[in-house]
Length: 172
Image (cartoon, rainbow, N blue to C red):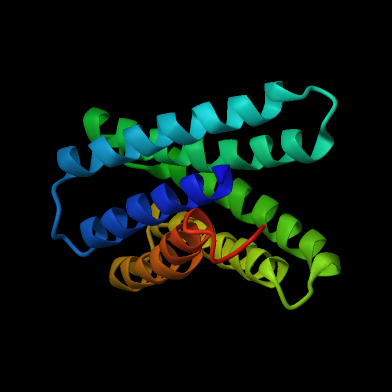
């Protein structure tokens, strides 16, 4: 259920961030959900890491969840600080590569169940973070494309799977 909770709010923050990238939400307002979801996912990550200190799967899940937490907290902080986002862009490059490795690692677990979605999502998130790297650190003029892809990821890698897990439709 923790995964469902996390994904639901990842979907929410990505959805609002996509709308923000389209220019429909202001900087200060978008910072609120980024900070809230960043804090929530940080608490979840810390819980996973320290709940069972000998559970390597939980520690791994917590470590990867922190990639999301720090991204959202950084986006929120950038809005308040009016930062240019270049540092965040380089962090996104690091996370993109990490997410690609997680995606490749999860290929061996693929079946016709939740593992297929998990692998797809890690590659989708890797591409998303890479697009933020290109947008922020390299200053590529791709904001609208990134916004649309962010909305896609919000719906198909966060919101829908999160709700399905929370409703018990999908077991992880």
